[in-house]
Length: 464
Ligand SMILES: *[C@@H]1O[C@H](CO)[C@@H](O)[C@H](O)[C@H]1NC(C)=O
Ligand SMILES: *[C@@H]1O[C@H](CO)[C@@H](O)[C@H](O)[C@H]1NC(C)=O
Ligand SMILES: *[C@@H]1O[C@H](CO)[C@@H](O)[C@H](O)[C@H]1NC(C)=O
Ligand SMILES: *[C@@H]1O[C@H](CO)[C@@H](O)[C@H](O)[C@H]1NC(C)=O
Image (cartoon, rainbow, N blue to C red; front, top):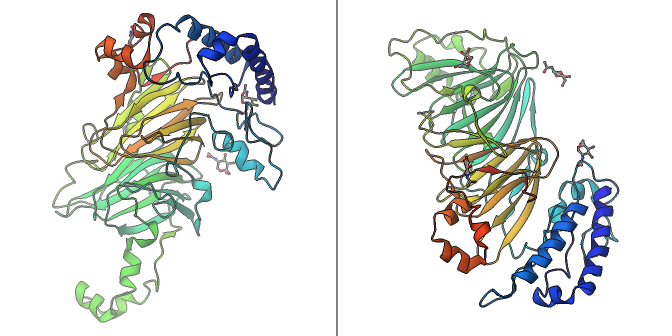
């Protein structure tokens, strides 16, 4: 509520400023007229920004007008918003008279009242797992996001799966590799590779597993956590569907029993009790968390299919932290790389892009917003919270700003063997300063703030 009041206050202050400071408004024609902001402190910085422009007016941008000074902050915080939010930003927009889905509008302030910097068309970059149809089974559930739900997300698809203690995601395989991040509890995985080498391990919260394409595996919740386990699966193919995997019981139900008996060299009666259809997820007895693989004359898989990512110490940054797992640390994971990022309240994953890889994002906690810059004047801002999937095509400039008052934590996932990004600030710091200044009319003082080291997560905002 206080934010609504602040924006009203701000609009009043700004209209006053515009009339009281004609010099500033004529130098910066459209800067203040459509302004709106989120807090009194932003109002004062906006006003001082206006007077700075006046002082710097001699160095006019050579060919086009200055960009608006509107700070374009978020209009309400989904946690603290009350009442019915309106599609109004400064003196743009108008109230909703027709029906309104208030709950969704509260969650999406930058969709309902976009920053004035948003323009053109960008493919949809937000999919809440809450909107995915859930497949309920005895013992758990599974829901997915793939290209059918989010057309821009062609390079990866995701599944969110829950298994009660002891429950099994049955023995199966599929055409793509499978990467996983454990969200809660402990999961025991088993597998056998093409050389007949096996693998069995248990992973806990924040840990990873990876199965190469076509390699058979199973997933089972241990009883270490009374509620079993939940995890996020990511597949390096946007058209993957969890509903079209190759399952053991689906296969045995679709083979003549005469053939089954011949294959295993036993009497046909051995198969009297096989299921008539696939089991997919089913309850079972919890395995021991320290179970070991069946003794294997071929030996164990040479590169482990699990990685203790939870044990990796995150690199502390001025505004949060980051840790990365790709094939340089998790050798078998040649088709998925991940960065786990935390962003403190008010801080931000800096402006950057990924040179060759689309990013499939998953929000673990907190609230954030991201603007996708798609070139040719196209930009769109989305709001995210825990359980939301984001998608950013390769080369699209973006940032992730913590818009809440708790830690923002999310995963950046890529269909690749190496994590890579390009930092806007580092790029500018390492480019001839006069060239940068000729583009952006930046002061020497501002240039001295550019850091040659990639900052990754910056903030909170400098008030200096
Ligand atoms: C911080 O979060 C709490 C809990 O969601 C909320 O009640 C409060 O209004 C928030 N404060 C601000 C300043 O956003
Ligand atoms: C198990 O789940 C229940 C119901 O969601 C929850 O109240 C409880 O805290 C959970 N226990 C643990 C140990 O996670
Ligand atoms: C994680 O670290 C803890 C403490 O250092 C250690 O006891 C444990 O074995 C490690 N787990 C794995 C899977 O490496
Ligand atoms: C640049 O960043 C590093 C940390 O990455 C920091 O130690 C250093 O002080 C920064 N330099 C400037 C000029 O801000």
